[in-house]
Length: 107
Length: 120
Image (tube, rainbow over all chains, first blue to last red; front, side, top):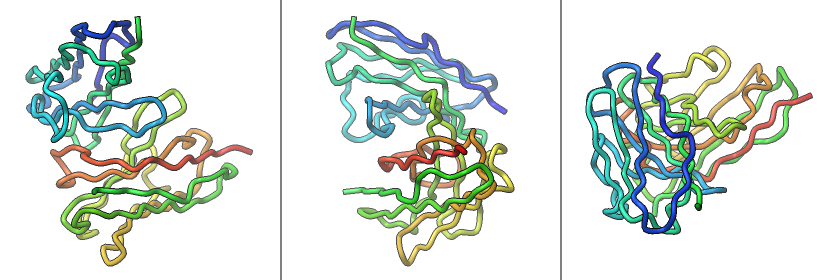
């Protein structure tokens, strides 16, 4: 099974900061890497699919990069509504494995 | 507007059964694959099961294989999850989600979730 490892598990940031979250797959997953945002009390919401393609309606301050096994989600100019937990997910293996999540908290 | 509404969760004893339902609207239901994803008490997300648009292909996580059965009724725009032999580690919020196809895709809409608690 593919394992997805995110780092850090949590981070503290301020409005306006640039935030970077990493995700590493235990094996090659080509382009099948997705990112989700989950606000407290809500369901997860698709942000980015296929490494770097923004889902409709997602602000351009969100940016996904990477290839093969190493991927990054960057938030440029953190906004108040971005304080949430972020999950990466592989959709290559058929097991749709998620990372453990990265919680972005107010500094 | 795309909407997915789950129901059927609740408290059940170990070894018991539950049937979850998900009612879909706002999109062409029989054009997409459908899935169940659960969020465990520690907030970890785990894909549980998926079914192709035509009900011909079902896939399951190893942790639920042989105990859970996924199905859909395209005439009713509904997805189901029959859960048997429930265990305490099945306790989670269960989300209904959709993807363009059963594999190599992403979950582009989610329901609000329904809580399943397995405890004596």
